[in-house]
Length: 335
Image 1 (cartoon, helix red, strand yellow):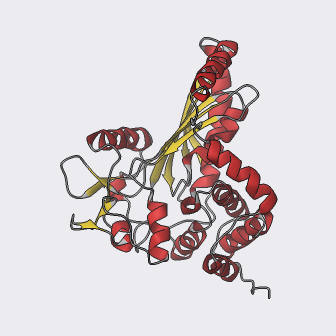
Image 2 (cartoon, rainbow, N blue to C red):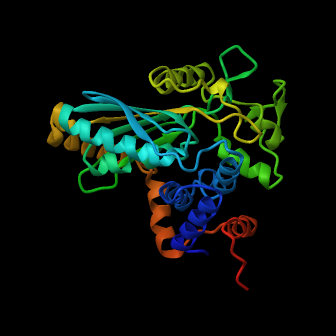
């Protein structure tokens, strides 16, 4: 299995060859490799070719440099300037850590951005700083508003991270659809059908065709509850940041406009409320109670174990994907 370092070099080189700056390529490659190591292949190396395509087509500005365009106490707003999302997200995380340490809570919005990847990835530094973190993003339309038949909201993932004292953080990361679009993308690449109930095509008809699902509408989790959550995320990521609505962003998987995706990242300092000692004590009590019930698995535990294995063993990727990465990186395959 290829080592993580080898794959990071390939992904970085592929993105740079497609027009990304050194910082953008390196920041993006690290995020994709982290997702791959966690077993989140839909947000991992399978995205390199898509990002490279968007760079070459001009849907992403590879030379963009994100900048803070507004600051006011505990809040700030970053313009990703049409680049890949990861440099802007890293800047947003630095902003919320700094401001939450000063004000107790912080909110940073990002506008004019692109695909956010695995949402919880961005929150690891927040937990390392002893803070609670929340992350949201919108995306091209994928979920119909309740009662409608056309895709309106994005998959609009939500993520949270809760630091622990002497243990790995609790990590929650979920798309508001029955399955992530990245997983359907992988199945489309492999020519596999999707299970019934995952999606409808662009005409609103149920489909098991993965390719038709990518340009159709995905089923929201929990029906009306999932669509209400998608609306909530849309407001946080669009109305507060000035980004484009999900329905105003063309699909990543067809020729289209430059995405103007919005993200929102929040950090909360436990010390500013009941205090850090109380927070960590209550977290420990909750986890002890959960684990007293045989069979309970903490959110994020599977990903954390997968990452530990990947760091020593590498990751298994499809032969076709490995060949694609080598080609995009301008390297011939070793025999």
